[in-house]
Structure formats: C-alpha cells, structure tokens
Image: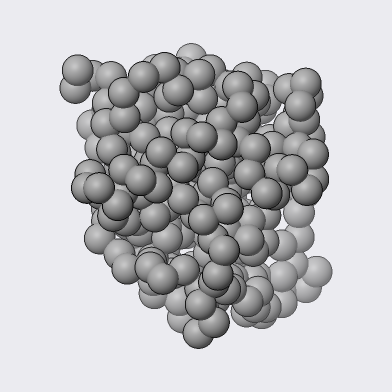
Length: 260
C-alpha cells in the first residue's frame, strides 16, 4: 500500500472464528501465533515490529496482532487492545478492519504519513495515519487491488480487480510495479491474495499455488519473512504484520475449502 513496508497496504476487531480455534499444535497458523505471542513486550503491552526491534507500530501491526491472538492468547490480545486505547487510537484506518472481515470504507485510497506517538526510553511507538491526499495509480499494486476487490465484494467491479491480481501472478509471486522495481516479491501480498480470492470464492489453481508459496516462507520460529527473491530465497526477517496476514490468509483459504 505504498507506505511502510507497503501495506498495509489494522481496538480489536471481533472473533477470530471457530476454524481458527481448531488449529493443531503442529499447524503453520498455530506456530505463527506462538511466534507472535513470544514477541509480546509487557512493559508496553505491545509487539515490536520484529524480534529485537525498538519500534512498535499501533497500525497496522498491533491492531492485527490483537485480532489474530484474540482466541488463542486472550490475555495478550486484551493487553494489546488496552495499550492501543491508552495511546488514544481507538480504530485503525479501515484497511485492517476490511482484512479481518468487518465493514469499512477504504475507497478512494489515500496516501499515508508515519507518525511517532511517543518514546519510552529507546523504544518508539509509531502508527500510520491516512492523509487527505487521494492516491493515483494504485491499480498497479497487487495489495491495493486485493483490498479493492474485498471492498467491492462479489460484484462486477470486485471481480475486475481480482482479475487484475491474477494477471500479475508469474508463477513465483505477484510481479507488480514494486516487485519489478526491487526485483523481489513481498510475502504479505501472497497473504492478501489468499484473503481476497477466498472472499470472492475464486476458482482455479491460483489460490492453491499462492498458499504453497506462502507456506514455504514460514521460518522455523513460526513467523513469516518480509520478502523473497526470484529463486524463492527468503529476504529480511520474520515480522508481526506479515505473520498476522499470513495466518489470516491461510485460514480464509481453509474456510473456502471447507465450504466446497
């Protein structure tokens, strides 16, 4: 979403769902949740961007984490919600709510600014804030196409956005303008595609291929890495936002499969 780590192209946000509660100890999503829980910083009541980081993002990282951990780690989830409210941020920018299945207005997409909320010693609490500047050219970015398809739903416009997503799949990842520029793929875009495609009940083999690629990018720690190259080599470190979105994407896909 063409802001910090591009997403964002997300207080908490409702029940995670019975399907998530049923995950097993060995499942990727369960390992992902354990990875998130281990990052919890009781001093701030928040999760850092990644292990060892001194930056704590309210939106989107901790909004997402509160939702993802709601049933599996309710104490941590409640602590995150309380910490976010303490900072005076009672809702996200709409994108997070949309991703987790709530009604939200995100269109037209707008540019974002990064804001320091406050410092606690060497730790910094930050968040992303929407500006009034409307974003042009967003159709070139897979993450925003996915969000637009979710926002529009199962109608002609939503389907058109999804078809644009499909055209950008090259067998390894989504080769949008960002991927072309940096010569690497963003992992979170795989997760968003799973969410969007599952919501639209997309047919074909694409979602299965995206799921397989996403699973390959999970580290032994349980977290998902930020990026990967043309050969599938992982780039970066496992982080909160990508891991949360991966969990949500995998579970949306599982729900779609169960409904068939």
